Image 1: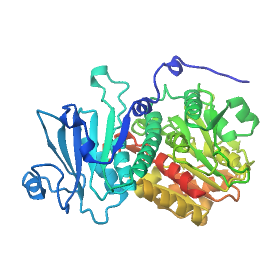
Image 2: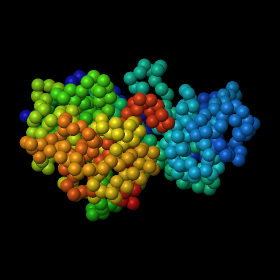
Image 3: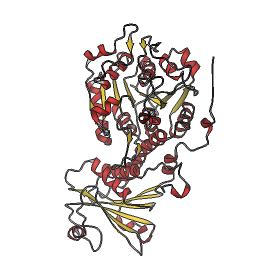
Image 4: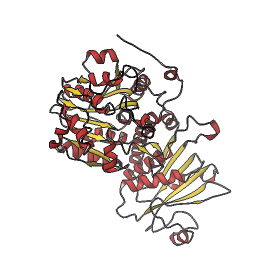
Length: 513
């Protein structure tokens, strides 16, 4: 029987993508020379100069390194000094540190510092040092935009943050204007991926339900050049997706499986495909294995993996990705009712394996097992799944670093390179097969959690998932820690971080190139 009980909350008319809306209204341009800047006489504008601690000169009349140092500005990476003006634009000096050997993360951090120094100003021109190359300019713009993100849709009008309306970049390496214009567009594509992931993950759980998440996916597909298909609960049951249907049983909101497809222009049918799978638990109470109240605070963010994939898909066209990419996003909340999945039940996954449910709060792996099996059935060249999966990941690696593990060293290398390029840190954990005994069940093929031995929880979760990818090269990315931040830090904003969106977009860009 099909049931569809829709709460009034599921019908709230609110923009679920406010960050994307703000970014869409941004005016972005590149000027080859600082002399072309026109806003220096505008008091509503700020002009930010990136200054290395070993700069030969400072491009602002009346200032040099000694005078800046005397004023307390030593050009350390991320340091800022603001010089107000009563007759024109505010001047902001931003430190780069020692210019020799700076990586993209340093330029991204400098861009974030620009944003942090703006105050209420909504127009800024960033002046690059003469030797800045296009990729470094891209990182600066990413930093400015990522740090400018704010989710204030639910605040009173007067308390809402004002997003940037104009960003101009000037200077840099001479005679490569076209390259600078290209990389600035790429920076916006990467920032947009993160904005979308943050918007969705920050959304309240009564507003972002499986149905509304699917609606957003269809909207994004129409807007950014990919396809979206939505599968409902009845069809999921007919498809044998016992994990998704089982977790959904306690909810008044029907589960959905969102399928995405990106096919580059002029791509041969035989081209190798990348498959992505993202956990989409829109709220996790723990089910009958109820979480304590303090552990539920961030559980609206338990769909951060699905959000990261949707963000990444929005960037694929603008990045010129040539590899076909598919995605499976299983989405439901994990709630309590008289029909909730019980501890001790045995459910059957899409690939026929049976699972004894020993903990209903280990639900993420139950919805992922079906999606992974579906992905594997299509014989992709690679599968990458991303999920806020285990608290053990936070214990092992903290809040900045995601755990990765998989069955392919080559694919792990690709994921790690994408992480390095985007400043989204990962660290490999071993899929130690001897730990698989912790997932053995006396009644079924597997159990979903071992409550008597909680050691290596991230690894055993990965081992569980490995049963559903067949022989396809696969990597699992556990983002439980870095998906949420308790504070603003460099280009990361408090709340949902959007971790993984840029990483996955970069992976798609590079893996088949």
